[in-house]
Amino acid sequence: MNIGIDIDGVILDSEKTIRTKAELYNTINLNNRPIKDANELRIQEKYNWTHNEFTEFVHKYFVECSENSNFMPYVKEVTDLLRKDGHKLIIITARGKYLKEMRTIVEEKFENEGLKFDKYYWAQEEKADICVNENIDVMIEDYYTNCIKIANKNIKTLYFRDAGIKEIKDNSNITEVHNWGEIYKYILNMAKERNNKV
Image (tube, rainbow, N blue to C red; front, side):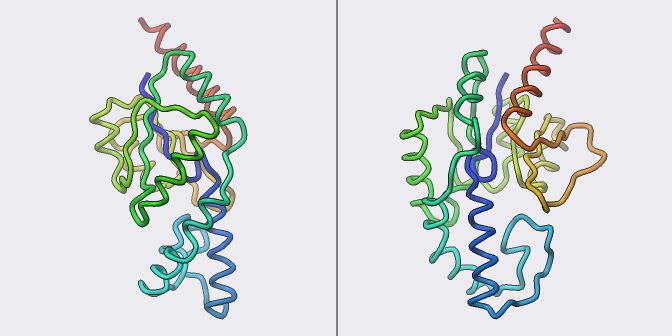
């Protein structure tokens, strides 16, 4: 199968790192400004920041947060298993959209960890059409808007949801997961189901 995989919030805990730094920035630098939407994943939609404040935060802290991010538990083991099982792994990420060095940081992290993928799509805000063009069977994504758009293309989507982030209900193409063990189990069962139909 062709498996699409996001990076931030799926392979790396960078979303959590950025959200933590953003909370500190909002509390300390912006005098504890009221939050616009506490359940938002993206800081530009969560906080009442101006465009300039958001841009300043990105340029001051995105690289630092990226460098300080860690791999999700067992991501290497599971991606190795998926490759061994014959699946094609395709990175589809928005990383690199704001700062080009964000891509370099993650490429070095992948190399140091020995993580390998078959294809890479960088700086991609809109992922649904790429999923269609690449014949993605299942996409692993942490941003709920992307999950809905991809699922609406009739592509199975694993919503890697962190605590406190919006739920997605009543969508048969979306399954919520919280770790790479659940991801492997879902893909293994999906592959078995497909093989039984042949």
